Amino acid sequence: MAQRQAPSDLTAAASARAGRRRLSIVGQLWDGLLIAGAFVGLIVLWQIATTAFAIPSYILPSPLEIIAAIAGDWLRLLQNALVTFGEAAAGFAISIVVGIPLGVLIIYSKWLQRILYPLLVASQSIPKVALAPIFVVWFGFGPLPKVLIAFSIAFFAIVVNTVVGLSRTPPEMIHLMRSLGARPMQIFFRVRVPMAMPYIFAGIKISAAFSVVGAIVGEFIAASSGLGYLQLVADNNFQIPLLFGILVLLSVMGAVLYYIVVLIEWIALPPPLRSTDTGQGHGTL
Amino acid sequence: MMEPIRDAAAARGLPITVCGIDMVFGGRGTPVQALAAVSLEIAAGSFCSILGPSGCGKSTLMMLVAGLYRPTEGHIAIGGKRLDGCYTDAGIVFQTDVLLPWLSVLDNVLMPARVKRLDMAWARSRAGDLLGQVGLSGFEARYPGELSGGMRQRVAICRALLSDPPILLMDEPFGALDALTREKMQTDLNRIWADDVKTVMLITHDIEEAVLLSDEVIVMSPRPGRILQRFPIALSQPRSPEIRRNPAFHHIVDEIRDLFRATGVL
Ligand SMILES: Nc1ncnc2c1ncn2[C@@H]1O[C@H](COP(=O)(O)OP(=O)(O)O)[C@@H](O)[C@H]1O
Ligand SMILES: [Mg+2]
Image 1: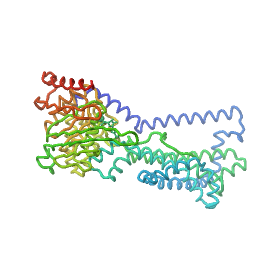
Image 2: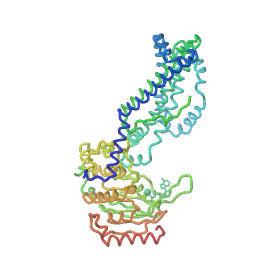
Image 3: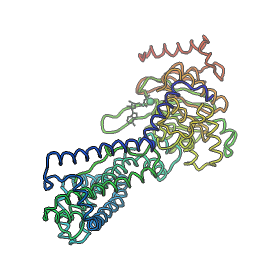
Image 4: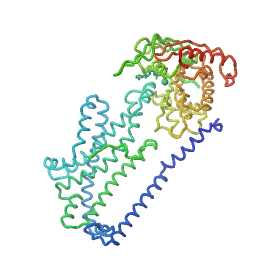
């Protein structure tokens, strides 16, 4: 019977193969190579432009000067980067540990949904960056206020995406599960959680980037170590190439956190659930 | 192959009784009456179609029989037992395929076995048999997103049949398919049913499909849905596609079409 498939079956199989290619590791690597190529091209262009137009390095240092600044100061940079990374990672981890369960509670509690959720959404109009000085007043100059700022910026994206994801289960799927005699717990773990996964991961990716922002902002306000602190020092000493070097390290840090999440997503989720973009995400600084 | 736990009578299907059902949907706006005074009886092991225009409450009727909705008035009984809550032994094919996109074809078909904690070795072999019967051998590891609409609907039918349910409820299972695929699947369904008789309630808006497959066709009026007339189909089962050339087939189709014309549906 299998060899007597209708034509529509064959075209479906063909388009499925095309879809697989797009989702495959090879396809992703190819896309990655293209992006890397464009990136390198941009750097080269930058180098040529700064040399050709003789732009002074206190306005825009060339990529080579930036690399030299990083290489000349690498130990200090590494030590301070680890401080910032620790703060960001802690804030990020707490925002996952708090954000996902809070999203689940909001979905399952009418009261939280009616009262806490609107408050959370409204809280997003507060520029959380402005909380930084207050946190310093409350929690001192150590790493704690930085972790808390990172957390307060990062966790909202996770909560909202968890709530949105868990509420996206089509009613027909719930009907199907109920008709099979599934208990609420079975419906939750077999349908609602998988359905929410692309959203939750999109939220986690956003907060990965946001948590680095939070840590830096905290260090700008009051710190004696960390890349944010080092930026202020470099700025005061007019070390513009170093300033740019720190920017590079911060970008790398955000990217590392982001791609750790992507890696976990690839390992943990079957292809149809992997979020391919962060378009679903919500969040404000 | 038979599921070992059920007795012989249930294996041939259970009768469905719908008794004096009114269904009114509340909500914020004005209440909508979907069904009015619907009573019907589907004999154990018979194939019955509910035929009516779009929006007349056919899906609602199926959800009521599945126990997924509660009637405003009246009651449903399956195998002589009144429903109180969800009926969990029916195989259901919903209007959309409702496959879980993150599960492979095989895992979708096995979902009833996982939820009901059936013997997995038995379930796997049955899933393989069913997928083979609908021409989907070799697609077990694919995801639903990689399949055509017709293939997905066949997977949904396999899933509904997996636990060897005593009743099968289907809501316009072929409605979204192209004409050729639909005809093929109608033939497949008739064969599967004739091989292993169950009580089937098929929702459809396709007159020929209803007459082709059913022992009885129940015709409903536009909303609020009432039962207009019941048409016993005296053609012998199983039905081959050649039955479309039979004058008796066309006679019944025309009769139903006349009824729709008389009530202003056509
Ligand atoms: N869950 C619901 N809530 C409110 N109204 C509904 C609901 N389901 C169906 N209806 C209404 O009931 C009527 C019958 O719907 P339905 O049973 O889906 O018809 P059919 O399947 O025959 O096309 C329609 O007017 C529809 O708007
Ligand atoms: Mg319908």
